[in-house]
Amino acid sequence: MNIISIRSQFPSLELKSNDQPTIFFDNAAGTQVARQSIDRLTQYFLSSNANTGGVFETSLRSDELIETCRQKVADFLGVKDRQEVAFGPNMTTLTQAFARAFGRSCKEGDEIITTSLEHEANISPWLGLAKERGVKVRFVDINLEDMTINLDSLRRQLSNRTRLVAVGYASNAFGTVNPVREVAELAHSVGALCFVDAVHYSPHGLIDVKELGCDVLVYSVYKAFGPHLGVIWGRREIMEGLETFHLRTVKNIIPDKFEVGTQNHEGIAGALGSIEYLETLPKLLGKPENASPNNSLPLAMNGIREYEKTISERLLEVFAKYSKIKVYGITDTKRLNERVPTFAINVEGYSAKEVAKKLAEKSINVWSGNYYALEPMTRLGIEEKGGAVRISLVHYNTFEEIDLLDKALNSL
Ligand SMILES: Cc1ncc(COP(=O)(O)O)c(C=O)c1O
Image (cartoon, rainbow, N blue to C red; front, side, top):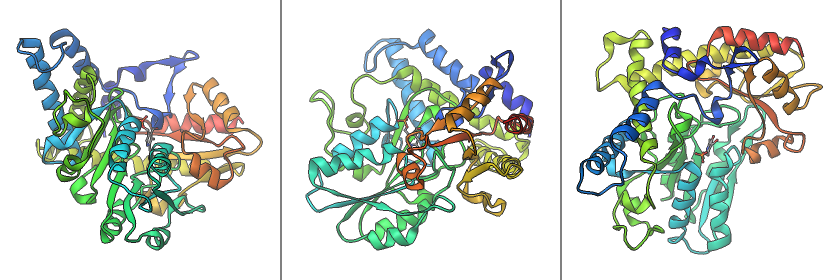
């Protein structure tokens, strides 16, 4: 894997903090943006900037570009029918919109199941339906020792009242990869839909909605090397059947009925660039011999996954050196398949924020607090103590950067 070439695709990795190269270990809050994405975004303003649906060239170019991007995002998610993909400001807004529309088909006594491992954006929209529609929201229990979801708890709570099961693909706090396929099968066994929050998994591995067998999936492009933009995919028959909150002037067809108001055209162009970057990755990962337009995304994402397992292993070795460091979540290096390199830790004697500040002084960007993973932090009993430090890496991070983190932790 050619890490130097990979890093050169991200101009902002050159940034310095305190006169030192910045170490971006804050990726779970948004990755740095690939050059192809920045170029696409800039190019949109230079050559196509217009509203959609006009008869003149810039508008026609905008229309075409948006559809090209929709196709590329469909490819990224393993979706055949690109009209099943809609854009929006971010995952939270799209999930709220989906939940409200879905709520119109719910009646009192219906149940929605989410899990205690979720980001709040996969909880609050469903709780909103409890208030508005009398829907009961149930929570799948988590195993606190490794921050995994408890499938028996899900099985116990499923019933013919269940309308939807909402689950994250990967935890944005602890890096756990959830058994989404199994969750989808369980949801379907009682006739419920499976809604997947793939925001945190999107920069780390291949998403294939056919493989997952889910019904609706959301992700955010800014977590996967592109600009601030959200994406929702849903099976045609489900999305067509929903009564959304669109304007009278918008046709009641997909994707239009989900894309309320003028879209972020430049962001959509940037999303195209972010996936074009990923398609170049097999070459940079040293797998050009097998690469073809049809399999470049699987090769790229599987290559990322393999590399990231090695950085997870190294990070776990570093944390294990320090008795005062507590890692929440999977720490067994034989279980790296079940996690991505996102780690929530605490250091005895320091608050999470203090650690984040100390690392920032060493030019290492990390997050502290709950990062909207309020429910699992509360379940762990650390919410009121200030949560945990989150160290989250992606494929452009290096072993050298981990060595510098090790040194910084050693100085605490
Ligand atoms: C797992 C997960 N779900 C949902 C969200 C919300 O995404 P957005 O910022 O696009 O609304 C985030 C953002 O941090 C996340 O990490």
